[in-house]
Length: 299
Length: 99
Image 1 (cartoon, helix red, strand yellow):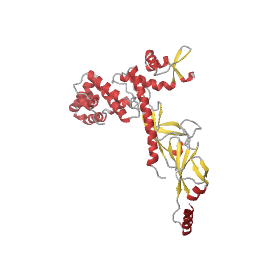
Image 2 (cartoon, one colour):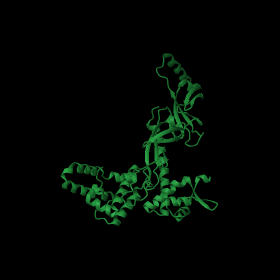
Image 3 (cartoon, each protein chain N blue to C red):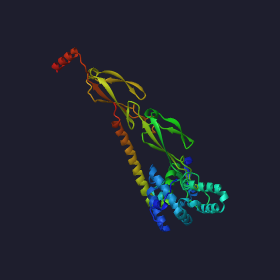
Image 4 (cartoon, rainbow over the protein chains, first blue to last red):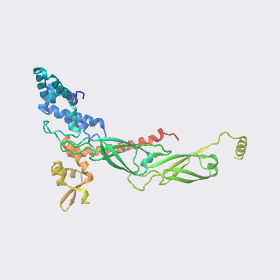
């Protein structure tokens, strides 16, 4: 993991007093706290960095080590010992080097994870505050047809199976929160939450606006002039529609209750709205042209 | 109904908070306390809100009035985000106009 400048994160200099650290931390925490920035992953990440910086710099012992050893501050004492041992005992060169390798690999990330990844560390880090576990964010891609009815899904989040009933009528972009299914809380803090964003594709002929569905119907000239009956598709089957004589282009017809289910309101549906598009015949035969001319004369 | 209620004494012990804090939240109208036979409860649906209020108070030193302001603004923000989502979906109808 790359070196993180905790002073830079808190926007302070190396000579900052304890009061300055506390004040900088509070100011930034108020800006990036996850409760004040719901569904903002960037703010969540910043908040974690700020907390990490504060945990290290607000502890005089840790701060001293951090100032002296930089990224290896946590293993500073051991690092010194290892180096001394390395110079004294050339014969143990190999094992010493292995130890050193571990120090380099083990930089900030484990500290970071101990605070937010769920594995609370209780060793010598002093007293940590209780922290809510990490919130997980996930996307669930579904097709419009799949959300026409409620259905159960089993999601695998971080190797855990979560049974989820998706209510009919869920919206594209809608976020649902599943409390306590995020990362484990730290030091007895509550578990984080799981946020699922629904991404709903649409492979159907219908356009959706909330609970209402829209579709266009092509109508031939003669049916629009003389009236008739057509069969159209709805989301739950076919429906016969009567076309009134002299139907104009762009006429809308509303089928009540044939739209999309209303979210969490069982048995309640929106409307289905059809718009008629009258198709003018093309490639007219000579006879058709004659007949149209005759009609024109009559008008 | 009592099944969905959690005793305030239990909450105070669990979250290590003073009763006065919950009382102040109630007086500001941020939470509702249900009293049954002289015992005070909070509805379980409101626990996540209460947790948020505790975090704002403990982690950010926000006082009760501040929590009230934060909750009002978060409500407004949520409503705006929902409205934005509806408008985006409506816009999608025209953007993907293939019919």
